[in-house]
Length: 169
Image (cartoon, rainbow, N blue to C red; front, side, top):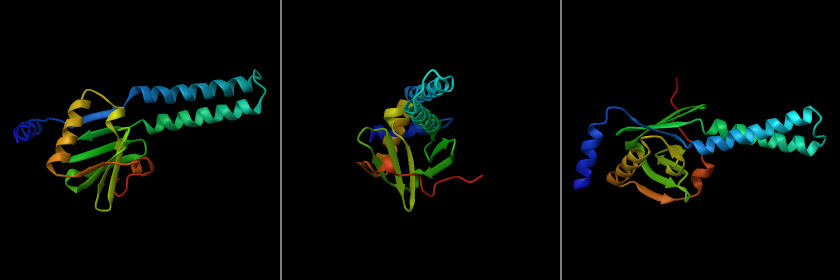
């Protein structure tokens, strides 16, 4: 009980939402793949490499790299009432009061917050970065514990998208 009082006191004193972003190493891998793909394409165009296989592999590297870069351009904000995901594809928000179940992948790299006909899929703590990372994790854990939200390991978040939580406008 004491930790709940201390944590609630801390939450009441928050002056701004806590923010985490995708870990830099994942972004770097995406940029490296994109760079390798572009380098092979340039070498092909300059006739330094004359194989179609090289061009196809360059395309795969470039597309995968670009996909990783686009998908990791996210940030997550959390406060005592709301969790919000910002990405290049939109803004997604879910109230903590709506969360009924939390599914976490075994690698802790993806989390799905599931509510009544709603779902918010966010990066998990394994790929978070930023100054608020530790406090962010503690806040999420406190919210899940206090509300007695069912939390379980699952591979489902890997295959899910957020549903009915997109913020219009």
